[in-house]
Image 1 (cartoon, rainbow, N blue to C red):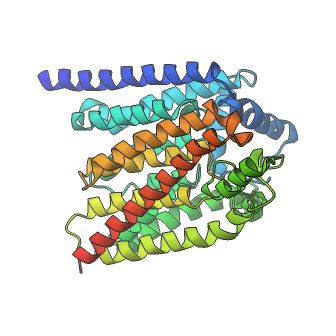
Image 2 (cartoon, helix red, strand yellow):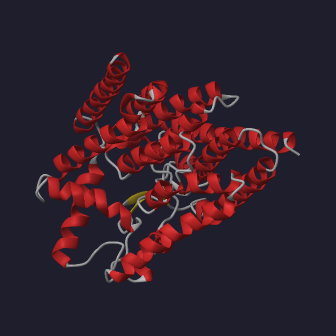
Length: 402
């Protein structure tokens, strides 16, 4: 009875804290400058409305910027909101899913040792601000948290991570790290491939076509360098110094991008640098896995490193991308990896700076004011520095396990 009581207290504390954090973020979103919840009104809601009126399915038989799984939370929000109150439906579904994810992560209170991780999970979200609950990541991140719970239970979490990667691509970091660090790689590859193949075949059976199913990959060619990306910094600083305006709106992708001098840096450098970063991670991870005595620590470090690479060398750099780091950082914390306190402190700073960047000083960034650009520069360099720290730590893992 006493154990049951402790479990209930653990779960109740986590759920109450989650509700408080969610309420704070939602209220903040409605009352913030720069409309940080604008994607709900101006992207997600019109997408689902037009889809229903046009009798097509995004990501199935109509090209889309997201994998087809991203349609699930959008459609659920539309159903809950009865088509009109989409934002209300979104937040109802999002809060419910967050509560479910945290309950599962804590094993409904039985895994009380994970309560501290839940605390940091909520802190990261609050520091990141309203974008943490008003983007597709608001569903992909808690699903990643559930997968992390499976990993900490001694499973691979690869099934959930593969499904999650068909909602937003970034959970592939858990798949890549699990396969690289595992001594049973073939099994992990078969699992990931089988689940992905099953999802694609199901989509084809429902009337989809491969061109639209994989349009979330091919449509990326329509993007130029987005304002928040590290590759946009030269254009933005040149605009500040030369008193020119380098920021333009991409109507097709609904994004703010840079144009003019140095604006092609993202298009030229992003793909090769990302390929090199991922190749380095996999190479070092494979070497380290041969004699590693702590496979879980290696997997956690690989997960964080790959997630950082996907942000640091990305030509997009939307503020919600920092969401991708939340569960990998928790993974590192759970394994007591050397340097955990540094990663924790850096993550807190990155989240806080990202919230300042968007929405607080976003207008000043768009008008290339030097003070605002300095904040963006510091945040981007900090992410790059974190990637460099993790790649160096991976190299030490590889040397230590020769």
